[in-house]
Image 1 (tube, one colour):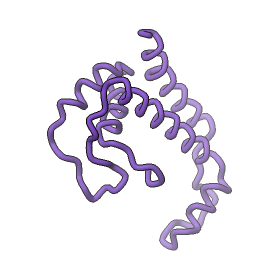
Image 2: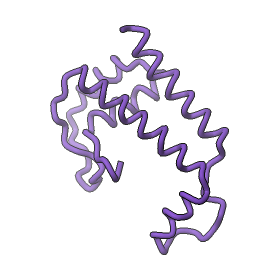
Image 3: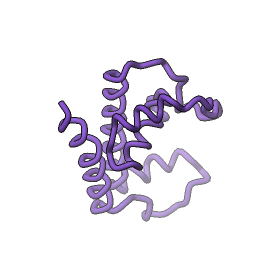
Image 4: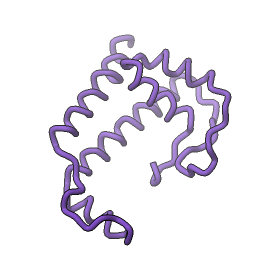
Length: 122
């Protein structure tokens, strides 16, 4: 998200959808009712832009794809070590990548709970 900041309502709805078993319409409804402003110190979050439900759903799917792509990159120790080299305070270890099986489990979870829910109602 640091490369592509997201509307705070998109991040909220995505998180809620994962938490509540993939019910995206419920997550969108809850996210729209949030009236507390997000913490402006997080530059990865944009102010709510008033997206309609269709656009919000598309943005959530885009975020899901981005999360899956990031997880896949984190299974590659060379990519992670290279990224960490930019941060002098980062630990110097080869044990910085995540297990492929964990990545696959998370990607399957995202697929089942978000994509199947959406496409079962279209």
